[in-house]
Image (cartoon, rainbow, N blue to C red; front, side):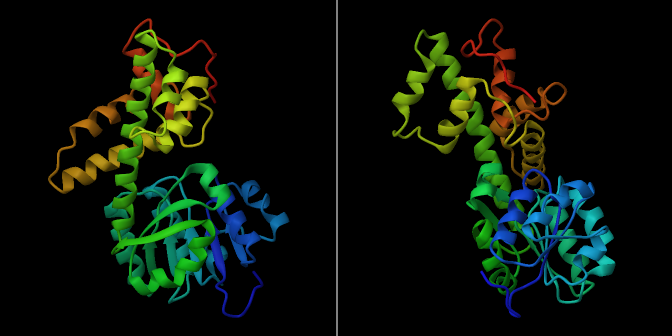
Length: 303
């Protein structure tokens, strides 16, 4: 895409595991992108793609029409936006693609509005592979006109959908993580049951694919479990954080989610030993509770 006067200038804050491929896609699409990261060396990796690196968040956003944040958690998002605020232009649009609590997104919306800055929360699902391929599911909460402005940019990174007002993108992400986290546990249980019952778990996975049990989790993470490949795409600590936020949101809405409580406890049991392992490492928590049972005989691949 050729840069034109109508093309928005973008600042991208947070060049991590997800942020790097997302910002790279925007640069490859022809957008002018200024980047910032707490560890400058990570930002420098994008210079070869045409990125401009700034030393501070405020300097990075100074000329931006759209500011995208992709950071570790809500408190970090609030810190970075506070640091960037002196540089934000009135009328700029901040799109936070991090996973935060709904209340944090709503507070950020209100705080930025006081300074004449617009806000969309737009968390994603699809992991590093989805970020690299530009196939992320992007769940957006905000004003419809602001979403329409951001949509062409978001579409470079995946499939954006407006799900409601500010804060609702985070609710949609929590719904996604609830389903993913629960399904990961069920797939682990199914494969371990297959082996304990005398069947070939790899063959069982093949047999049930294409039926009602088929899912992306069974396809990708079922294979990871069979290979015991727990090198990170998504991480245990991220899944645990998201599930804790699910329970907080449920409590705020007056809901009790008993299955999610059990799934969250499984991830909690891994936080001390393997927090940076892939989320499919929930298999390890299941094996801990079933002494003497282990899926396959491959060595564990752990970060």
